[in-house]
Each structure stands twice: as C-alpha cells, then as structure tokens.
Image 1 (cartoon, rainbow, N blue to C red):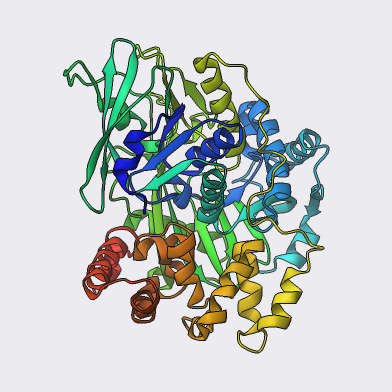
Image 2: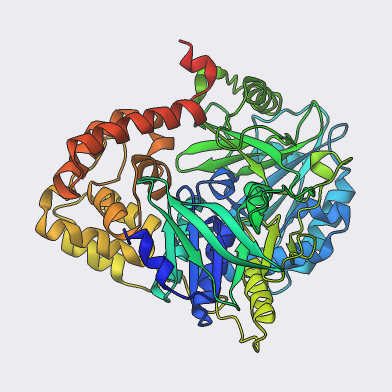
Amino acid sequence: MKNLQTISNNAYDLVIIGGGINGAGAARDAALRGLKTLLIEKNDFSSGSTSWSTRLIHGGLRYLESYEFALVQESLREREILLHIAPHLVKPLLLTIPIYRYRSRPYWKIQAGMMLYDLFSFHKSLLSHRMLPKKKFQQLFPYLDFEGLLGGAQYYDCQVAYAERLCLENILSAQAAGATVLNYVQLMQLHQHKNRIVALTCEDCLTGEEVTVKLSSQAVVVNTSGPWVDQILESITANGSTDKKESQKIGATKGSHIIVDAFVGAPPTALYVEAKTDGRPFFIIPWLGRYLIGTTDKHFQGNLEQIKACEDEIDYLLAETNHLIPIAQLCREDVKFTYSGVRPLPWSENKQPGQITRRHILDDGAEEGIDNLISLVGGKLTTYRQVGEEIVDAVYTKLGRQVPVSRTKDIPLPGAILPHDYRPQKALQNYGNLIPPRSIHHLFLIYGAKAVEVLALTDNSPDLAQIISPGLPDIKAQIVYAVNSELARTLVDIIRRRTALAMLDNYGLDLLPVIIKTLFDHCDWSLEDCDQQRNDYYTYIQQNCIPDYQLSK
C-alpha cells in the first residue's frame, strides 16, 4: 500500500472522492484522457451502492411510463457498450413479465412498451421481445399463479452477477493508466479559500495516518460519494469556519434483497413482477445457482454505515414471491443472505420513492460558491460509463482546457475476453491435471482474461490450486490474487467483493479457517492481523447481512 504521505507531494488535476462505480468510471476516463487523477474511498471500492444493487444492466423499461425517454435511450446505448467492453462480466438475461387482469398494467400497454423498448434499442445485439398468450405462458411457467392471468411478455436486458468486479476493473484500468487509487482513505475535511477548494485532509482508516493534500490553483474536486454526497459537502471549511451547508441534494431510498436457494417452482428465467399487495415492481432472478429477490423501495434517513434488511422487508419479499409462485412456500428459514443499501437519488420532498427520477445531475458547486467542485447526484450502475464521460468533460471545462474525446466506450476492460479467445482451452490443457475443470471455467467467468494470472500463482505454490470449499469451485489462489493484485486489504474485501463466497456459503463463516491460513502462509498476515480480521468479519456480517431473527437464535 502506497504511503499516504506520498500523495501530498503530487500535483493532481483531479481529485475524486468516492470509489463506487461512478467514481471508478470517472477515474478511468480521466486517466485515459491524460489527467493526473487521485481517487480516494473511505471503505473498499464498490462497498456502497454498487454492491447493494440488483445486479442488472438494464434500459429502464419502467421509465417509459414516466416519459423519461432520454434516460431509456441512454441506458440502452450504455447496455450495448458494456456488452462489448466487458463481455466476461455483462451477460444477456431473459426476463419474463406475467400480466394479470387486476394487478398489472393492461396487456396492450405492456405490449406497446415492449415495442417502444425495442425501437429505442434498434441497433442492439440482443433479441427483440415476444408476447406470450395465456396458454403458451402456462406451458412455460406452470407453477405461477393463474388467477386473472392474461399472458406475459419476454425481453432481454443484461445481468452483471459480479457487480463489484465491474467497479474493480474500472479501478484497475484507471490505475494502469496512471491514476492513484486508494481505498480505506477517508476525507476528513475540504478546505475552502474564497471560491475554491484549496486542500483536503485525509486519514488512512486502517492506520490512523493523516495527511493534508494541497491542491494546485487549477485542480478540480469531484464528489461521487453516492449517499454520502451531503456529508462530503458538510466537511467543507472556509477560513476556519465549520458552518454546515443548508441545502440537501440526496433523497436516499432504501432497497433490500434476499438470496435463497433454488426452490420448488423456481422460474427458468428472471421474473419482473408487480407485487400483488401494493403494485410495486420487483425481481426474482437466477443468480450464481441461487435466486436473488428484490428490491424494496422506501425513504431512508438512518445511519448509512449500518444498513440491514428489516424483518418486514424480508417478509414482504417472501410473501410476494409466494403470491406469485404458491408452490414455493418460502419462509424465513430459506433466506441464505440479505443485503441492503440506499439509492443516492435527487432530493424530492413530496414524492413517493418510485416517483423520484433516476436521472443523474451534475451539480457544479454554484450553491456552495465553489468554482472547482462537482457533485454527482444520482447515477445508475448501467450508465456509469456515460456519467464518467460527462464528469470528465465538465472537469476539462472547469480547467479551461480543450475537451479531448473520451475513449472508454472503445477500450475493453482489463478482463474482457471474446468468444474466439483460446486462453480458456489452453488453461485447461496446462492446468487440467492440477485444478478441476469447473474451477478453471469459474475463473474465466469471474476474471476473464486475467484468469491466467490467477492460475499462474499455482506454478510455484501448488497448494494454491486447492479448492476453498468442497461445494464451490473457488481456489486458494484467488485469495492471494485479491491481496497482491486487486487492492484487497480485509477479509470482507476478499470474501464479499473480490469473490462472492460470503453470499454462497453460510455467509462465508465456514470458510474462514482456510482463507485465514492461506493469508498467513502466502500474504504475510500476522497472527494478530488474522485475529483482528476474523473479528471484524464477524461484526460486518452480523451488522449487515444476517437477519436479526437468525441472530437471536
């Protein structure tokens, strides 16, 4: 880890606060265009809203109903770009919409929406929609509730099963292009003089080391901290004053998800459904051999550092799934993992959560009276690349320089691998006797072209070829690779975000002995480090992932 003091000696064109998908995308774009860029993140990259998402890359079908056509077009265009620059992470996903007489939009309205959706993505590589009359729908989905059923619609969007890794690859690409990217570095204070931010004080969250970075007269600060945007603005001090800013930019809404094993009547495709009790849309999505169900949508004003799915949210998602698939009979004991977070939506005082726009806003700092500040309000996983491009365009404008063309829509992410690439076959030939074929296949699904680097770790350390758990394909080399090559600094980083082990095997708790021993043997983690990390991992899982009713048993 780079010593924090070294960043105080560099003159940056751009400082980005927040290492979620939007900050990562902006850092990549800026570095590729030649800006000297610093990105700091107080936790781990993608540990906020990015990691709390439904893991979809979608055009926003429901935005058609609110006439947000520009947002739909932008989202569909970005979906197509991501299919080309990150094909190893972004995969086509077939979604089915059941249509009911009394709890859905009318059949004709959904059909019209499908046609418009296809029209807005005329040059797409995905297949167009199809409508399913009632009889055909019942043949394909015999376990769904038939009461009032009129038929259904099917269309394609995309899934990014490892959303955290999409963010990480943008971070690593930015780093390779010359950006300085630091996780676990928290902004403590933004120092304002007259109409500019002139310095920022930061702290290494793991060591307590503190440093003040002085900015050049031209540097721009970008606030991409998601739900924490207002908190960052409150850290501004002007000439020693600590007066808080009055305006509120973020109107956060909470969304929770549950993960369950495959169940009786589980659908063969993803389902996009209107809830029977309140008409809210939610998803039931096949995900890494399990099913992801969500999301809720309610106003949130609580502690952003500890967000957990409430029991009423869990019961709501279970009940709505059982309404739709009566044979499922899911109960609380079927919940294997939960996660919850907030959407950093624009502040809107009198609107219901579902009515708040999903368009993003680039706030130019005028309300704060600061010329070199940009704050991002909103932003979707799907459109992160376009948002990053807009941010960097705005930075160049504030710098008073000519705006060069963004390159991010044409340059693949580091792990991008195309169907005609022969590296997976070569890897199977070279490592098939040492590593199970399903593990090799799994590595290419997660790391794409970078899987060869993970496999190479086993050349000198054959024990790293061993699987971590008999029920999963992950191998020990992934643990070492996360620390040595992917900026992981904690067990939570490794088990929750560099891999999905936490969400696939009893919250990752049963895997701790193997993972900790691997870190001790290969990554120079001391016994004290291991003990501390074990305790921190237990705390994280209990506070954020395990439902309270399971903890009480």
